[in-house]
Amino acid sequence: MRRRTSLLLFLGILSFFLGIAYSLIYRTSDDLEYTEVEEYTEVEARANLPSEAKSSTLASKDNIKIKAVGDIVPGTNYPNNRLHSKKTVLFQSVKPLLQGADFLFGNFESTLTNYPYSSKGVGGGLIVPFRTPPSYTQLLKEAGFDILSVANNHSFDFYAQGFKDTIQNLDKTGIKAVGKKGQILIAHYQGLSIAWIGFSYLDNHNSINKLAKAKALLAKASKRADIVVISVHAGAEGTDAMRVRNQTEVFAGENRGNLVKFAHAMIDSGADLILGHSPHVPRALELYKGKLIAYSLGNFMGYRTLSTNAELAYSLVLEVELNKKGDFVTGKILPVYLNRQGIPYPDRQGRSIKLIRQLTQLDFPKTPLTVKNNGQILRK
Image 1 (spheres, rainbow, N blue to C red):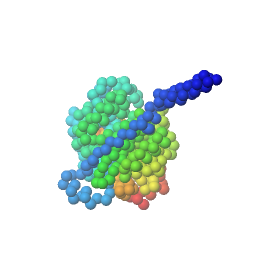
Image 2: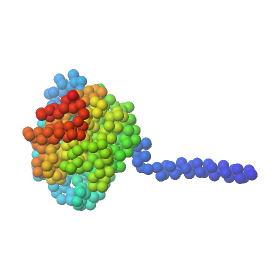
Image 3: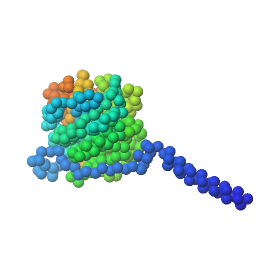
């Protein structure tokens, strides 16, 4: 009897420890990323303003100004060379539109690496790999970018090595990348802490399709920051995908997420500004509980890479002013148009203004926003 009791006790203890070992070994990598990996990248931000304006303008500012653009591909050298012979002309015409903000944000939809092997092979059909030389980081810095999202469907075009190289090469020039799984980028500026989190529809990044985990990450950011900005790369693509609907979007057989559900859930949980990209066309704006949602900023640059047919060439720089609580104060659409090569120019015709105003009225007729003819965005 005594031996039997000892044996049962031994087996019970053994089962307990085997259970713990099993849970550690077979816990999914996604669970590990969200529960055990907390990366807080902190940076002391510097305003993207002319030097002569800094001392007089910033000391008395009550609001924070953010400028944001959509997808950026400044050319690729894979599988063949599609780089501009004079790369400095790429941002030349739109540089004035990018100035004058406390933060300039964009989605970098390429890689900055020399890694020779692509996870997409040499491409074909909708499978297109992008690789931009690391030297282009200087071009991005000179354009004024402070923060670039790397959470998109091209960030792993050259495997994990290319993703790592992209982040490191941006960091070398002082541009902060956001989009690693579990990462919260916190920028300290004029006594405020602004957190940035990058999402996409893919499991390689923080995914909009895993809402509970997205909320948990946002909760961590809200504890550390006064304002939280969400970058999200999701939604179907193309001119047939300009409308925003409260439903799951599917493109090329992929679940691209429900952007309305995600954006509303993020704001309900403490986010202050949602900056969307991926559809390659501008989409509607919405003011939800005093917070601005830009459902898609369209293409901003796609030199010999992104299509510029019809509304795919309609672009913009979105200017947003938030108060210290993250509430939307005012904004402006600075219209941009891409030429056939995908190079951006200021658009005197204001095509993106007209399009976004129309889409906002169609998709969110009750949202308390007015888009003026000059692009100004006002609360009703």
